[in-house]
Image (tube, rainbow, N blue to C red; front, side):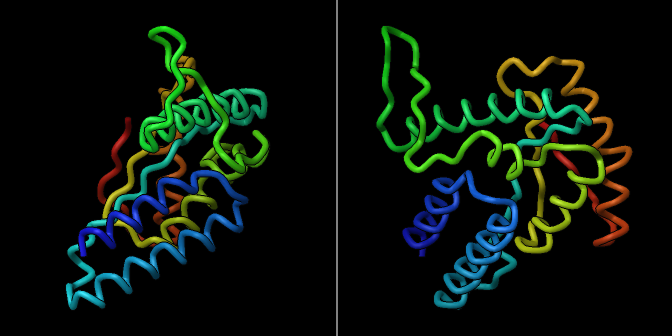
Length: 178
């Protein structure tokens, strides 16, 4: 069961970029795989303890959002190269190498929780609906994202996005920020 679950997690971590509508479809497929794996082992799904771990940047500025998407893509590239043990080094520096079949930056922007309050709330409701996570964790500060922008995103997540999500899905008890 552990090997199957690790395979499912590897699949989830290897598909960081795809269209928004495809994202919720893929999340639903991944959730179904997890349900099937737990059922095959006759284990209660309540033991899955799923966490939705997402990059999030709340802004009305497309330019700021694209910069955040670029930073998130950079972090994903580096993490993926290390996970696959295919890192490229220049001296002591880990080199940013595009992922296989990586979509354009505009697609990355659309796939992540980036946008104004309403857009982020809508995306988050869809993702929670598809994955039924026990926890959600958001990364607001990646790369050279200004501290003030990250703090503003956190404030908007708690003050405006969370109430919208709760109106759609019911009470949200805990929110973690990174």
